[in-house]
Length: 177
Length: 200
Ligand SMILES: [Zn+2]
Image 1 (cartoon, rainbow over the protein chains, first blue to last red):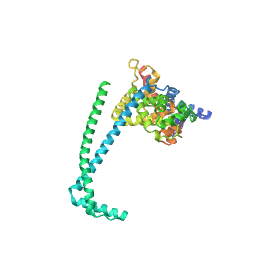
Image 2: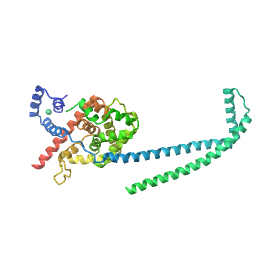
Image 3: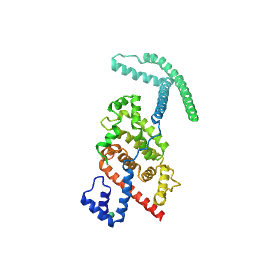
Image 4: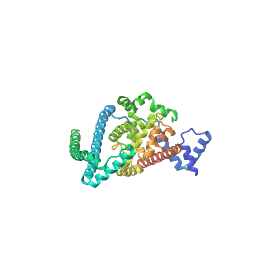
């Protein structure tokens, strides 16, 4: 630690100095221009920072908070609704792709059915014929496939409409502001 | 300088634990009381950090929104005032980071201001000379140091509380505060020397 650093510590100390420290500091300041300038600077700085007045917001901050909060809640709800729509679309798309892939290829369908039948018999001990199971599963799969395609198209269309409308509303609000 | 105990009392005296608990349980009216109690320290922090009233207003509102959405994470054993100031300070630091280009421009302006140009009476738009001086000198500090100076001198937080708010060690806070005070003294003495030179 060089000589100045010690005196700088004294200049900026938040604790009261001892008499010995005070005398040593004063003696050093008489002969050191840089520490002396720092001390003068800090005297002004400390005076400015002594009980400074906090900057107050413009009156009515809490009322403005109320509208801000309301707006944020609306945005949050919209965001959640959008997330739900996109989640549903993704899920339905996957469901549809899966059903279509199964229905398009009898080989895939039979493979799934045999895996399912093996799983069923190992879990319950009941053996079901693969062909029987395939005929049972085929109709629901067809319904799910076709239903999912039309539902996902509907939801995608509704989602687009909803987003277009909310953007329109927000632009309207901004224009009014 | 008032330390240790008073800092905590100052920032928490206007709000009860019960109000905080109710706010945590999503009671909007309880949170409104929190906004009412902390609007000045939060706004003051944002203003000192951003140096602009409009931006400070937006940042203060965002700070309260962040506080509301993060209330579940609040540790009830921690002083609430310290926590909310920490959110405000970090929010402002993030904002400034995002606008770094703009910040560089301010720094360049400061380089010009500090050595020799003191705003003369004509340029002096601020009604309060002291306020203008404080803002001018605060600009010379880094964002983190400035936030710490605001916490220490406006909100009277102790080293320990500042350390908790800024996620730093107590010794780091001590040395950063020392460095910040030194920096302020240096800027002030250079400014005063330039002022003197101008009058001669
Ligand atoms: Zn010296």
